[in-house]
Image (cartoon, rainbow, N blue to C red; front, side, top):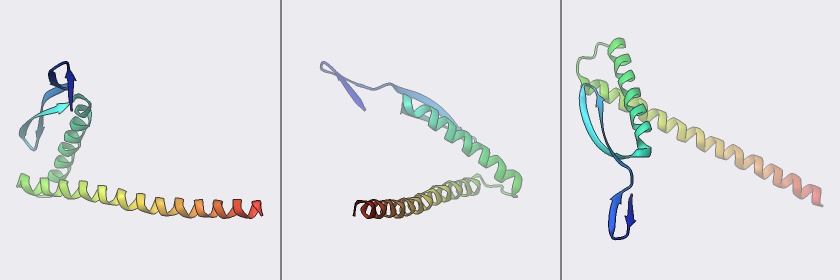
Length: 106
């Protein structure tokens, strides 16, 4: 995001950070509010890499990263599926409440 001060545009609180993932350094320019989330994500990826390397005879970092990507994607998909089920449950409860209110108003 850019903020305008008079005629000067400045990137709002831009930070330059470096993250290491799978023994590779990634320099990033980010918003300040993104830093904590990105650092936590990089840490989780590193922890998952270590678990996969210890649990399986994986020699190629690309294979380990692919397994990490699959695990994270599966978690996101499962959360979306669970959220959809929760919405259906909430909708049914609201319909039941609506019906109960209508019955009381008769």
